[in-house]
Image (cartoon, rainbow, N blue to C red; front, side, top):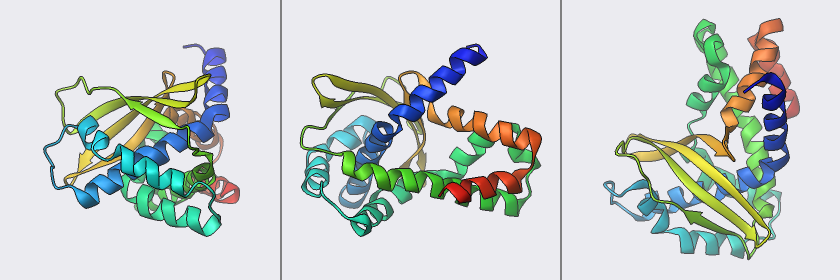
Length: 213
């Protein structure tokens, strides 16, 4: 993909980010409920989601009109434990990650984590009574790192293909990347990180992320 097409793709992702984050919220909520209420660690990833999709959607739709405190509570309860922020940050940082010291890696992961949390909190209100998710069967034999493909249906005229890279981490699933219509979300951040790290330093990247949080 040439630079012009890549920039167009990144712009497209940013425009659709609320719906992407909405889907992440819904799927991570499913992971949260299943992890709390089920002990079937041998379940296939899509089965793990499907077993709890109805009660999870019910809870989200029931709390459609929520205030900022409710948003924070939902994010902290359902999303944070099931996102691998360290891995997402490492992938977004690319080759520059290896040259960072331990403190820089920690601070950058925190800043990137907060960037995503702001987006997650703002997306909670996007859920409505018509939102549905179709989950497609997992085609991989690898049960520790897989891609789960879904179709987000807001209404008859609005659908979105979304894929999730999830991995087993200490017997629980965690998301570390999201694909929207063929473009990986972490890759879009990787381009932004690269532009800053090429011309300045890690501290400047951290400061810019924190400034926007």
